[in-house]
Image (cartoon, rainbow, N blue to C red; front, side, top):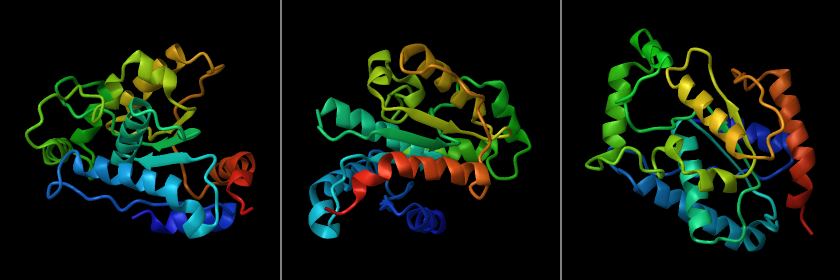
Length: 219
């Protein structure tokens, strides 16, 4: 679904972008998708130079919705297993942060009138992904409940959200935890709605390319 944007960003920023076509639920439930991106990450760091002639010294992870959920779970796995080449930054868009509807915040009431992400669909998605798993506070599929020591090991994180997103409040809560636990955070900007075609977003991606792009050039 994001192939158009991935191709455009890769061409505009002159950096390689790897999109992982991980398996989907309900046919493939947790942890199948996480296993896919785990294998994809290892393939990248072990084969990028021989296959593409690039050395991935700096890797940026990005994901939207459920993709962000997997991005954080992957980073958690990399830290636990002492992988040397950790991501240098994380970009997340309207993330799904917890696999539970037991405790609802005000933004969840947007699902009552949302024509795409209504309450019934939210519940179905959670059930389809978890199957028989009932530990909804497990950090591998509910990043909102990350332990403090995990948060301290995360790379810099940029969160983009929508003002009408039913999951908006979870993003704000995570942002507050990041600011509290990470000494490297000097300021906190308002959670913003992102327009992938806006000049502001293109400028941010261009600056990102300047900071990280040189590490991907062929040698």
